[in-house]
Length: 492
Ligand SMILES: O=C(O)C(=O)/C=C/C=C/O
Image 1 (cartoon, rainbow, N blue to C red):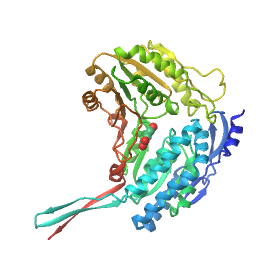
Image 2: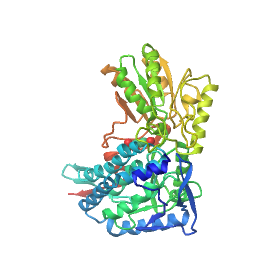
Image 3: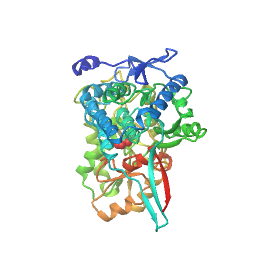
Image 4: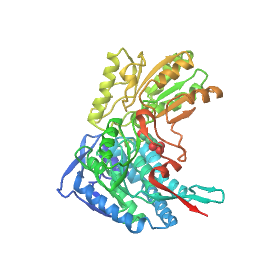
């Protein structure tokens, strides 16, 4: 059955994407567009307006007007009600959004429907509630003076978003940005424009005033992305994506001294001690290795197993991996969909070839499934026999590819886990409570899970260290980024 005919079953069709500026859908001034490819069919499923300097200028001007207009003066309770309503409408349109997210990314429809879209709605619900509870600080200087801090919004904020969890990550930024009273210009990833486009009308329907949320499609360099990072009226940029792109944005933003929040790349260790519960480890490690085709910055792609458990783990994990179903993202039985694009597919494939050159053993996967001649499909891949200094163990692959290395001592695996210029997340499996705390405290990562993975409390600090990011978002940390504090000292 053709993939598109399954889409009929889901009753959603791909959409052409215009910019959303000042509350209206508009094409680029120069009418330029680019094509949107469905990664499962490799066919053009629509066109996308290609924005540049001009569209960014219009969007930032609209955001500035809206900021100076009603939005920043809106009572927090009213703003919270509108933000909560955005979450409600996302849930009302879940099936449509999940289908579009699956068309754009090639991820299984079931994953978009169960994780991506509900979490996008929750991002708004969480920050609508959280904003009511935040305070600031006050200090008495004996009977001489009283100090108290007030919190103000920044103004116009640029949000630059990745293609792996498009709506989840865009709303992870937009919700607190709005809750803090800012206005926003969003630049979706060029490969995933459709749910971002719908977010415009969803915000409008929820009561967001025109100009508060603006969406401009386009590319990075010499396009909408670059223009956003250079615009003098944009006072902050929150970016999720590759470390190299982050460095380019920092250079551009320096000229106007923009505040930056970065969640960048990762090459996350998954450390499994011999005392761990193997059934539990296997079940979760299948997810932390291959969910979303391994295209999650938090995936534990470097697996380290204590030697007594190594053979049993490799055998059981490989067998379980072979049971994963690679296929049509719209098929309810599919657990692994396509990679995002031909370019990314070739890049991930090249790492599998490199692994063999570096002496690795492909325990399973590494190829296009025979029965899938069209679409950017790659089998989940397990590689053993490498050493920690191999490029395949050091470099972010961002695909369904993991390496497994044995270790003998705690000190050794901590050293190996930290031997990377990344520092985003880590997973530790052990039932030894003291060891769990001791090892976690020594792993250089911003987010560390023990006996679980991707369990998210949105109040917690979220972000990476080293080359994996700058700053934290989540709970109060988001408000720290999306607002300014002023201390007022009153002489008594
Ligand atoms: O769970 C989150 O809030 C989040 O930011 C996930 C990021 C995943 C990136 O690939």
